[in-house]
Image (cartoon, rainbow, N blue to C red; front, side):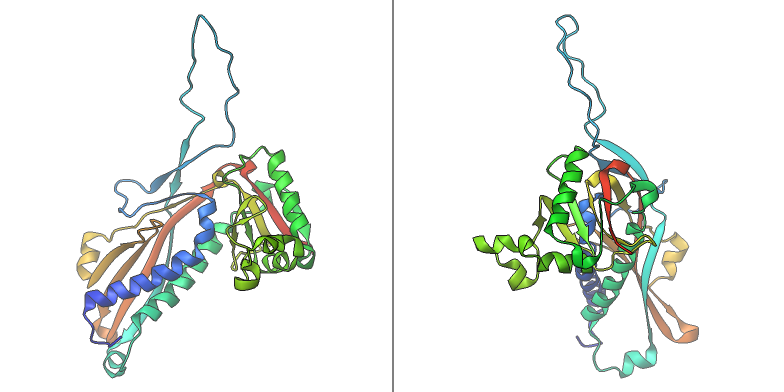
Length: 305
């Protein structure tokens, strides 16, 4: 894309490229309870994230005298999540570079920044998945021992925990994902005409009764974390933009809030110039927060030492 393209188009192209890469990496968050807002927070620093709790009230016996007794809680709950995390990727372009560079690919620039921003955000959120809160692992094997039988063990564990059958999720790191794909039992669907493992090296959206996501940047958290199974109420994630203070905004040449229409994910863009250094500066930012929901709604997979 030529460097003299209109400024508003540059911004839009950078943000579209960033969002395309960002939402692809951030996909595993769909297995948690989330609330993504595209309106700056006013008078508060929290987002109230709704979730469906695992625990439900016991069935009642009908009483002829009192009739039906209805409880207001237990169906859906909300919990405040503080938006206290700010991560950004920056770009700095000197005037000399700007004028002498024949071509700047703003879409590629945005994709590179969005991908790295997403990787750092999701690693931060997954850092919460530790034994102290979620207990002993349900699977602890070396990567080459991980196969479909381990998925069945995880399914039994979720049954024992009385998780609803819909909404169960599973996340694996690259190593466990690889060896699961290599297991003939995990590829049995190929016999019925589903050839995704062979065609796309993909296990698909569902594996062993779980909504499935691969997380190539899953941190081991110092505990050899290799994956987990979860119900959405395990971790609560919120997102909302932070609008610049008025005097700060006056110094910016651009401020944009860009929201993906499908997922609701929001990124912010700021641009300003530094005349003293003859440099234009741009930032793509994500403001978010997260916290533990229900500790009984997640169980870990670990890599055997």
